Length: 284
Image (cartoon, rainbow, N blue to C red):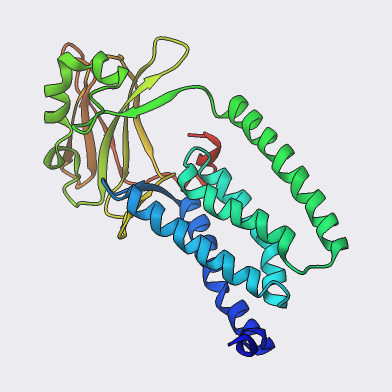
């Protein structure tokens, strides 16, 4: 057994196998850049257990193959991938902590030349410190301080937003039911947002694509960055009336009334805006 474990070809095979973990982290990073990750109710604990267990197993395998060239390369590149994962999921530490710990351990344990470790370590230290500072400054300056909360039947009963709309909650459930907010062709969905900001706030009516989410075992990847704002003039605390219609010429339109006393308006939905890839910076 000792001879088998010390065999260089076994170590090389394990080093190549470790690419599985690296590929999964890269795919997770790319997926959370393009989509919002929303855990399936009750699956967070199961995912975290599996995630940590896989990270520990692959950490042991990488330490075992630390002198293999494949593992050395991964130990140098993984901190960069984890940094991007951190940016795209800044407040979702369940995704960040396991690969972050693993990348730090492997960076120092791998049999990479000390000069390379010093150079790359300096670069990564500056990148993590300055990069995060720039991220937060950019988000503060250009992302704004508004908080958007979707108004629907799943609104958190313990939140301040729910308390603000408690008298209107029955109407929220009625207006946001699927048969009302889904377009006749099934391609779009109307979403109503409560907007909290430094001013008096407001209510936004938006249209987003429907049917582009990817449902997986532990979570759903929800399409993001594609949104057409129908109105941002709603009064905070007043739930607007919304619905779909088709004009005589076949144009799909959103009908909406911001308050019971206001006139009904309509906006056509023929072309959606391009995907906003910088939404993780708070840009909407």
